[in-house]
Image (cartoon, rainbow, N blue to C red; front, side, top):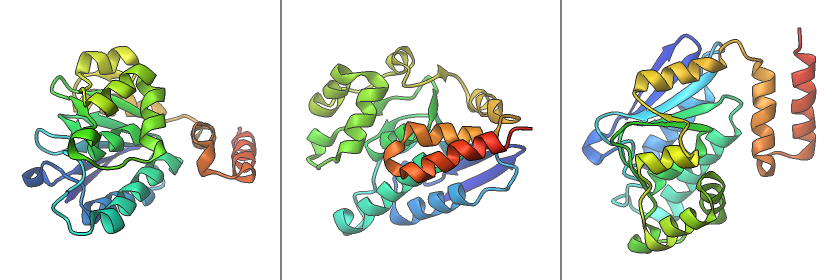
Amino acid sequence: MIKVVDSGPVRVISLDRHEKRNALSQELCTLLIDGILHPPSSTRAIVLTGEGTVFSAGADLDETDFQDALYPVIAKLMRTIVASPLPAVAYLNGPAIGAGMMLAMACDLRVVSETAVCSLPVTKIGIGVDSWPVEALAELIGGARARAMLLAGLPLDVDTAVATGFAVGRGSLEDALAFAGNFAGKSAETVANVKQQFAPSLFTEAERDAGVQAAWDARP
């Protein structure tokens, strides 16, 4: 269900359910969580992408007990990415829909291919959303565009993704890997510290203070 390739300081994790358009199942989410939590000690960044022509079509709604079983593990996956000390770069090799777009949003940075398009069709499907995707999307692309996506179901195309800063650039997987390579040689402690400050609600004040101290203590 996933492919993992460790290349120097970068771990590449690919969603590999192309027959299901890389839809997020409980098993797939659990494997992704494990791949993110247990990289080699030399890893300095993670790249998430999809096999085939789709990044992810979202939650696998064919799974039974979506609300009580699948939704919690999807939420755990998002928290794992955000809370990881390693920066995550999403390479959108194709459409990212629903929870697939949220997966990309949970990553620190995004690179998009020419075929990437993002959508959060919650009002079309008729499902509830919590505050995180709403707040995160508004921060990434602005309140008006976030409302257009969430309320009216309008998509986010490649040009707009780059223009708004949702994506740091457009290109190939190799471009995303090259971008992730920028984290090699940087202070891992400071990178983790900065990530904590971008997600203060996931960490206690003591944890954030400890992160600051760890960054200072790691200076040569």
